[in-house]
Length: 266
Image (tube, rainbow, N blue to C red):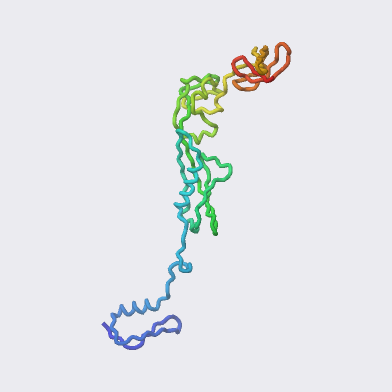
């Protein structure tokens, strides 16, 4: 231990000195140097000057949650269907001021709530901001698929289709749920087994073919008038068709209502 009395000078750079008076105190030599060094260090600022307040940022998890809740509220529920919402990651370096009001989520106009899309999350407060999050909505449900290979022109029967659960959000051209929707329709092209059926793949069975002799049916109140005609084009159930009245030679337009019968308005 050393007894130190007097004045210690500590060089601060240049010719400037700071004097510390020490009298009748005992210090270990190393302890004295540590004391002097700490006493002369400039004050260290912990963080930027925020006026006494700690900076607050919006958590990335809250942005994801706001986007997820919004999408869940917007997807129309369908019996038997289920949804899976996948949200893309946000950059961990993202710093957004904490929003003092409730976050608001939205999707751009015209967005389809299936497959890949973008969800916007915004703060409408005094210092507004908006961030966009990529998302993918996968929808699963039962659809009709071919149970065997189908040739073009084949008429579908109940044995030709089965129901299977799969992702329907990828079926952008539509799909079928019920077998009654497809039974009796014709395959517009050859279809391998296991193909999900879409409206583009099928066409209605023809009730009237061009050149067929048909019955022209007209209703006027309680009176029903029948006449004979010749079909000028093909038509499936409910499709419009032109026919020529065999007797008057007049061409009229009607709707195919059953095989060989066309109903015309009066």
